[in-house]
Each structure stands twice: as structure tokens, then as C-alpha cells.
Image (cartoon, rainbow, N blue to C red; front, side, top):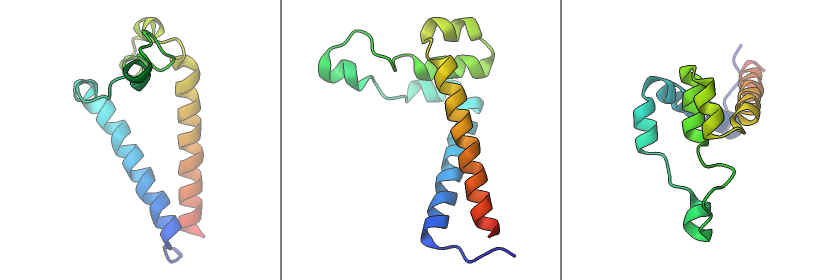
Length: 102
């Protein structure tokens, strides 16, 4: 039996659906994501030529496309960050659906 959805559970479900939609959009239309990705705020405010996050969006899309070498050259942190994001997404998925079934 599905329990009554309180505000916290409904918010978690909404966040999960939005994150899933963003992931599907990144896989289905990578050029759209690249076109509308935000500029580097560290470069904008502090004038850094390179920051730890620059190229992370392009590297993620390269990994999703199967171009690991391109992703390595864009930002090497992708091989640390992407598995952590996937792990956290799976944990969030389990938490949301466990709450829905309680």
C-alpha cells in the first residue's frame, strides 16, 4: 500500500523526476546541453584561466558518448566525479522509492 505523500516525500519525488529528466536530456540532446550550459563563474569573478570544474559538462557528455580519451583531456576529474554522482543518484533513488512504499 502506498502511503500518503507528505510535503517532504513529494519534494524528493519531484527532485528525482527532475534529475532523471536532466539526465535523459543530456543523453538525448548533448548539443542543446552544451549550448545552454552556464559559463564558468570562477573565471567570471576571479579571472582564473582554469578551474577544477571547467570542462566537466563537456567531459560528462564525452563519457556518455563513449569518448573516454576526449573526456580525459577535457577534465580528468570526470573519472572521480561521475562515479560519485551516479552513486549518489542511486542512493537517492533507493531512498525516494523506499519512502514511497512505507
